[in-house]
Length: 212
Image (cartoon, rainbow, N blue to C red; front, side, top):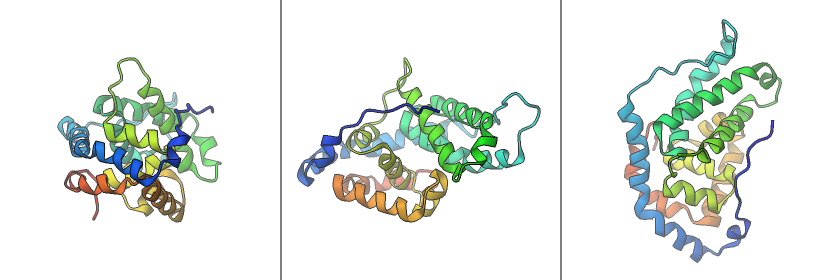
């Protein structure tokens, strides 16, 4: 499967701390509003039925059903943070799970099925972001994904805006907890993202799954 690629700005990774701090400071005032708007929109829609995808057979495997139940909510919260549109987020996650269902037997043969599933979700999010009529992502998301590799930006959103622990993130994306912690430290150190994320603490407490 060919995964859609997103633009990279490698020269920005060499930006010194003062410049990075200036960039992040410029979006600090928008973080609380962006996070609150995206997740409040989820809350306003209520708990919709997260219908299982139908890949063409009468019954889905039980292990796929269990995987879907465990990850649907986290996938949807993350996708809404990326897309800033609850309806588009729900549709994107459903399409990703339908794609996963079609490939489930192959995915189970992979060393890390959760990593493959996360790659599929990321591919569908990338497609949704360039779809005609797509809502412009919140400033904090645009900034993070412009300043660092996608896999690091994913972890920053999951840790600081979705409130997941390193262990929970590792299970969700199919990585080792130590690797997740290392990538988060690298993001904090190189791009000085910590200040504006800490400033949005009050908004983080309102996000589902947040833990102190």
